[in-house]
Image (cartoon, rainbow over the protein chains, first blue to last red):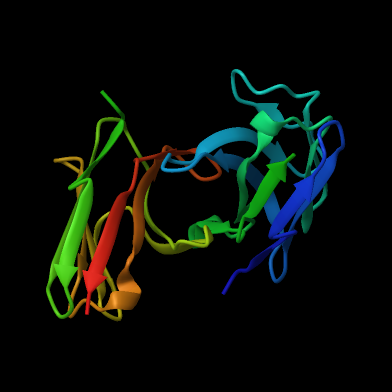
Length: 116
Length: 109
């Protein structure tokens, strides 16, 4: 079945640094990638939607200059948290929709970001 | 009122029990998804439904479009079924999903 590989699975970084999270679709072409964040005991919150070759569409309240999303190819999308602050500490997860839309959404395994 | 409501909020069961988790939604959808999230955080897509019923192993998912309601059933529950079960709905292919808050299921041995 469809697999999305997300790396890293966890990362600790210092305040002010940037962190890049990658999601790769391994056996299908992801036409759309969704990026979510999840706080403890909370549900997933959509941050942005990216389509291959296009600029990402950000949800209200999400700073596009802080959370940079690149979807340059059909198999790779990246989320870069720039100038990270402790309040950015969260669980980030991607989900992809392939060209065969009947398959549904495939989720990455998530990245636990801790900013110290 | 949330667009996607799940019940019960938390559920504890004894191994072997039949479990039902419910989901109601208030928006028009093209598909409903049942997702499983384990303590490590990774999410697995269990089912995508637009009508009727689907079965996979011990899991059965049903949806009633007219009543805007779906159920996830787990037969012969096992401790490894302990996880958060999330219902999500989408309005169309490639559309963003609206998530329920999830239900935490604990199955005791």
